[in-house]
Image 1 (tube, one colour):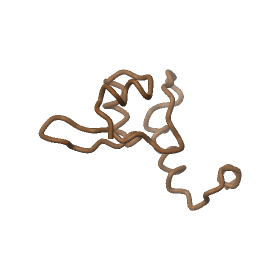
Image 2: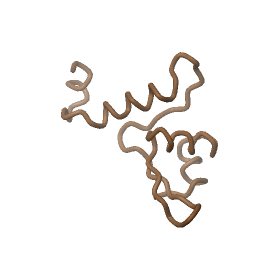
Image 3: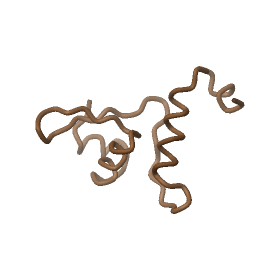
Length: 81
């Protein structure tokens, strides 16, 4: 578990982006006390910051959810499915 500043430094994003990613479920946020949260970095599929109006955050979050919920463990087989 990382603080907001540590997670931002690891991912190379701003605090605003980290909060948005947590809102959409790309990064997991765990409540620590009333207003401070600790962040859990995604495992094998670390997201990268993108600036595009055609690849919106909601679509990226859905793709990451589908990747993480896949039953297949081999990345080559996962790409075919």
